[in-house]
Image (cartoon, rainbow, N blue to C red; front, side):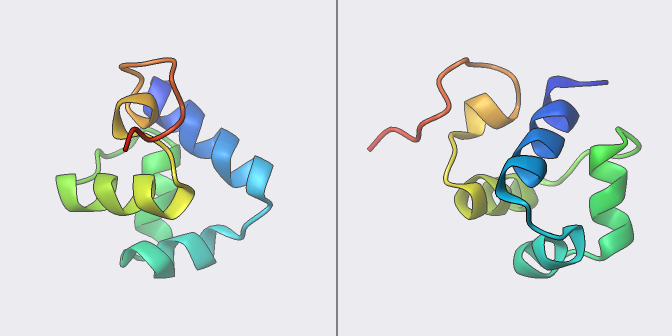
Length: 73
């Protein structure tokens, strides 16, 4: 499992938000969101940005490129 998938699952679990609600907020289908979590497909740049903004985390952290979770100003 990729760092992205693991972190996506971690965020969803921590925030206790329904997957269908996250999918609707970022503009994808529920099934498509599940595919991100299951490492079956990779999100577009627009979806990555939407996820980082939705969860208020850095893109680098979400993608597994950094251990710094907080967004930089």
